[in-house]
Length: 494
Image (cartoon, rainbow, N blue to C red; front, side):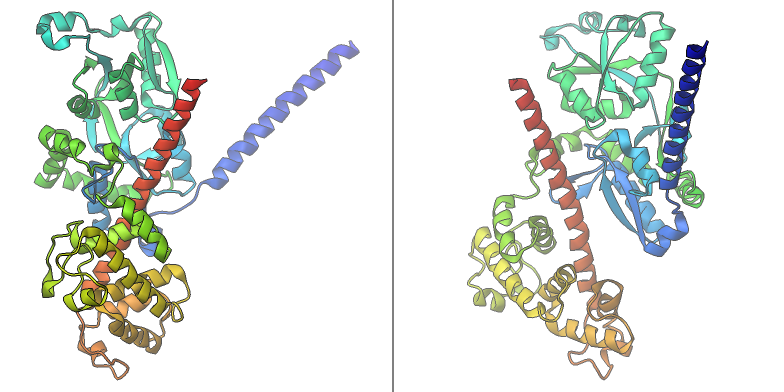
């Protein structure tokens, strides 16, 4: 009897401990959920979006950030008058935790609305309606087969999936659908689960390259993948229509309402249809992108000059992506470019300055880059004793490259006069440069260099910094991809 009571007490202790642990974990999770709604986002001036690096959502093509979700978000951010900051999704398994913990304000990727997900998050008005389809590989020699014979060699019904193995992420909406489908058809469908680090597009590629037999994808993305991999088939539908939407925190009611109001109206416009067709209907445009040497998803390169930029950027202690963003702003990576005032080359030197640094219109791209880096080194040396903070100094160097130091010195003096911080660029010195075309400022007694179209330099700096963030996102994701491939290669050798 004593043994029984001892066992009972120990059992109850374990149960209570487990319950308490669960409650603590749940409590900690609740504590980690940040409150940040539309008013906070507008005050900060930035909308942070979790976005997937993929052929339709977000990528760099010929130096420009592109993507369906990216362009939609840009339009919405402009609508609410804030900047857009992209946070690349590295693992789909943790996206809702990252959202609730404040890493992003919104998840804008191909997410189906499901009951399970509604426990953790809320969704906007649907962006798209799609279906889930089976991705399967066509047989060898499929091009020589008649259409009817090809069809016979492919799975034609969900019933044909019995005893087959489908590879998907456990955290995806496909997992619950396959589990339900297995019950519906009364036969076992084997599921091989993978990490959320492996994207839907990667799984489709694995089917095409014979690494796996089957996977599931959303139809809108599967159609695009068929353009790239002609040996896959995506015609077998395994679900009813599904709503694809953006995800926001449950406490971000004003943000969700704002998105819904804007999205419902925007979807009625021709602009939305053009944007949708650009990424999901335009096979010619897609094929041009994936074959281009500066489509980062396939080439891993931002420009023709990545290698030399990586070498030269070290001389000025810059990230090479920042130097690349600056060169794109100057010349779109075109060494033959000619600009206002006879500026020339990748770095758009004016003839007089170019002569000082040993370059002219006949100089090579490499020579132009080296000369540009030397000029940046000079500007950095000029500003270093004035602006000690490296991050802030970069802004002053970029602005000086565009308009010269004189107007910036005026803007600093104006900042001091009006009680702003003359050592900070954003929302301080940049404001006075932006407004230096107004008589109130360029006629001020502290101004020594007169009138300036400061908005040009203001936009110049902002666009370079924004593009730099995109380039940095891409290079970091490419490096992560290389590391993952190396790990897989090493495991294969074991």
